[in-house]
Length: 159
Length: 159
Image (cartoon, rainbow over the protein chains, first blue to last red):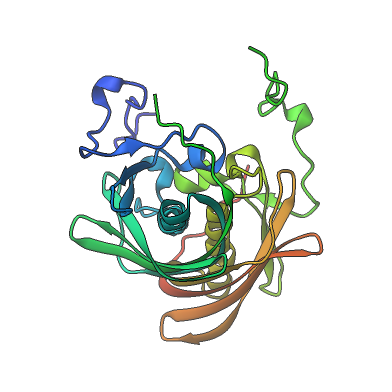
């Protein structure tokens, strides 16, 4: 049975139809685990320590309403805010607490971006305030507390 | 090159080696979107309205330390707590706010369970307190606010 709402072909594997990613973003070099399962994710680091992480909402991110699943937005918020600790300290980190406020929906095909800034730190604990958006639309606001661990090895960039 | 830390075969597709799931749990009938990407998830509903949702920590849930990724725990918390609204109202819902506190790590192979109870409700808004654990170990505590939407159709059980 052919259903009108299901594409007859997937173009996932055709590089000719890969979606356009905004200039300056690098695809994150994740090839295992949860990062691969929910990826690809993209990143744009600035010399001043600010950054944006991003992803394109695909079918494997959706809920039953064909919007980005709230769980995906939460997972992305964790990665988008925690990166502020990496940028400032170059240390590994674990998440201690996340507060995520769902402001609006992201749809399939939306380019979703997120960033965070360190609001306070004490000993190994960093409080990061962040925001997730798509174009002019705020999708989520979030605050995270992260504990910094050991120093990261030198980063390998995608090849 | 054969690396000692990478299995030579995957047994994902061999039903003979499917991990044992505790009795009473049903695999959730998710076959698309984010639920499929991060699944399988399991569920045990009781006649009194209480329930447990669960998953087995697999490679596609892990972070770089081979523990369950914090983003996966957050996504699971959303699904584990929000289900309290389904059980009480049989309505769809969206997440408004989640507060997630990371208490301990879950490792590959751990059977992780979670549940929630409605602490308060007003109009269409439900506040749910929940907990995620593995065996005797608490992994996460969480509080969620959910907004109930339309009535759900009759549920199809796995076949």
